[in-house]
Image (cartoon, rainbow, N blue to C red; front, side, top):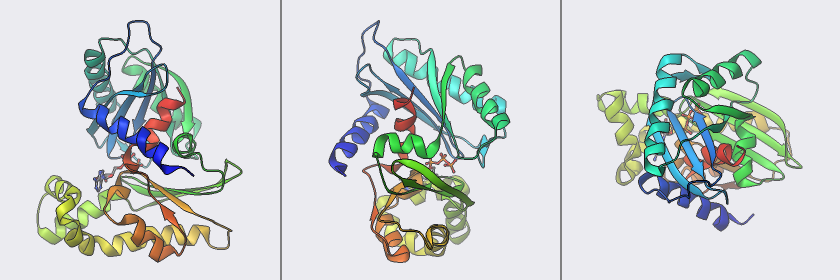
Length: 271
Ligand code: ATP
């Protein structure tokens, strides 16, 4: 797998958080909305499916794949869409969304209503590993998605998702451990967790939780022939996460440049 091409795409998207790439008035745009436990992310691609704008907000309006604050979620999506529309000078009309694998029809409907409530017609609802794999292009292997609330894994065989699992334990748990250890607020701990220059110290504090994430993966892949593991999700941004996981699981582990943006980019690619 050529990770340099994947990393280029993800880095281009990362640039679009701060910078907007101009688009023409009639250019077709592809929009992805990722409704996560910790972040809501909106990604826009141009007619060549290259990133042109990205906006995100920390939000606790979704829990375990379920919308727990419909009004709050809709308000945030509307705000992010408006921000991007102003930056691009274009109106966004359609979007793709993704839900955790196994989400029931009724809950998929609620995700759809959040985005439609914000003024976008939902053209596609896909599952998160399929979205991530639109970027990664894995034929055989396991995508491990460690987001805010859960550690999820999807086994791919011949490019098809053949097994999924999702268990509680994600970045929010790391933040709570840091908040308790340093006696600081959740928000302060969330900031501390992301400080690269302190990650040697903070990783030691949260190490048991990371071991738990690794054991979730190990338990679910036990007895299967797995050639490699690919990390996605914001929590995998932690420095050396791939080394820690590789050592614990005993399989080759790969991490793209910014694992946080893989699924949002994949959702937009499927619009
Ligand atoms: P879920 O997949 O559980 O529904 P989500 O989609 O919101 O949640 P992501 O957006 O993939 O999950 O990741 C969010 C988590 O990643 C949060 O816990 C956040 O603190 C963490 N995170 C984001 N960036 C970083 C970083 N640079 N270093 C460490 N953790 C990070």
